[in-house]
Length: 383
Image (cartoon, rainbow, N blue to C red):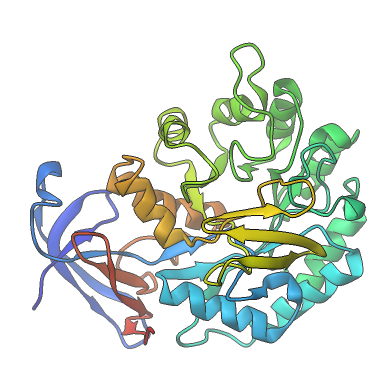
């Protein structure tokens, strides 16, 4: 049987192989020889790593999750799995409530149909708005921003059939944010998103039960030596997961390395934050009723020039983190697999190569080129 360099559940590389059961799970994982750190890229065998998970992206190939069409969801799910992302949690934009209801309801109906061969698993929904900051709105549409409201939250959860996993919040714009977070705990995960909060306010939000930070460094108060901001509060709150965009545009490599150093390898979650312009030529595209200009790898609002998401995917972000930002491969894998799985609460099913878990995995060559994608133990067709 062919041997691979397997990234195992204990966070080490081994030479070995795997077997899958008929129901699409890992039935056995044979780890024959542990590889020393210096051997990992010296050995010529291919890598076998878990399928990646993206918990925050909007679209690709001209489609956006918030288009609210089945074609959009299927397009996203197919594109992502063909690029090594076997589990997805797409993000909503800040839109009118009726429009958000329609998007959430469609996603619920799609998910209730069950697993679809050759398409990434729909694991949840990440609601980036509407409870965000006017000051740090980024590329979100300001006219739909609202203060947090428990009734609206319940409406989101009901419309989605429980698919909503994350709800963003700018605590400084919501006087009752602590009570809102406490009541939301156990129903959804509250994330600090598009927020101008100071360190103290952000820390209060985390202590009340917020457990997630949306795209660290972007659209939030930064890490200053006297005013640590949301970034500092995130570092200080040891149970909080932090999203990080490593497309080479959103966050400088020095700050990417700083994030891993400050948060550790178990709290960073790589995301793409990709837009409908991903995989498309340069030009003007729609983003929740606003116009976005794509020039190469950079997307900005036509009006105002704010940075507006990426044209990447998590596989490319992982590869960029390793090859251009000097993040150890092991840490980049964790941030793209088990960390997002834990943040979603699906780590018992996905996120690592382990007997009994879903057999979603990737084969990579030594240059980290994607050679094959397996879903439930079966290789999927890729363009």
